[in-house]
Image (tube, rainbow, N blue to C red):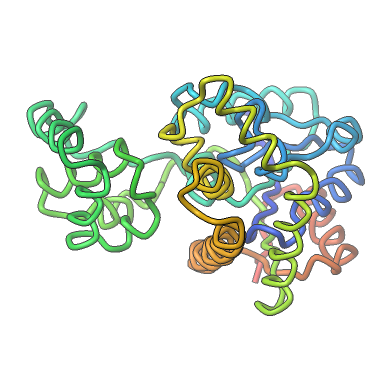
Amino acid sequence: MNTNKPKPKVIVICGPTGVGKTSAALEIAGKFNGEIINADSMQIYRYMDIGTAKPTPDEQARVKHHMIDIIDPDEPFDAAMYAKMARETIIKLDRQDIVSFVAGGTGFYVKALLHGLFTGPVKGGDVNVRERMKGEAAVHGAAFLHKRLSKCDPTAAENIHPNDAYRIIRALEVYEITGKSISECHEEHRFADEPFKVLTIGLNMSREILYDRINSRVDAMIDAGLVDEVKWLLDKGYSENLKSMQSIGYRHITDYIKGRLSWDEALSTLKRDTRRYAKRQMTWFKADSRVAWKKPEQLEDIIRLVKKFLSATRYCFSLL
């Protein structure tokens, strides 16, 4: 990036699942002729449309979207890859005088994009430690290591799925080598790499209303054909053990299809786990004091805030 050129300005629209980020991003980005960069870790996958609440073709035609449908469900992908691709997109758009609106609820992706990633105390880590843990995961399963992680780093364990062996091993590796949790290392790193000037807008509403919206959205996904979508993925050979297929919605419907859960159990558990995920998202975003919180219906206030941010010659105003 040309250091003589002002940093690109980026507007982030974040918040819990079901709060209305897609609608708000469409409305706000459209007002400023901007383009939307997805920050949902599930919407990157092709063929997984209904269960990820992916913007519809009409919505994507209304405002151009990036970082959607970029890999297949069985391809590896992580926050570092996301940050690299999304940063390149933001820089390209900035050169065309197009404003980037980052919209999504995957807090770790947003943080990686805006502030960089902690890469570890030892470049490449310790191969012996990593291979030993991979062996343990192969014998006992990722959940076995996840229980260990929950004891030494409950914060990381809360944010890492029990089946995400790669991230579990990485967190345990850092702890074994340094004696510090990966959460502590992230905090010390402080994500100091900041290539953009950022306005972060968080959308929120009362928990009761949000949970009602989540329950209704799950019902709408079922009506839209989520069961058939999951059946199609399984029939195409995408293993139920894939990281993508272990996500909320897909693992629940798979359990129903495989006969491990009754329909009522699958539906109620899906709604419960989605509500719990929304709570974790709020905990993540609330920890960032730079987020300007608004209700989804406060669009005019948000638009004024964005206009002020974009018109300022210098990033000199407070978000609080």
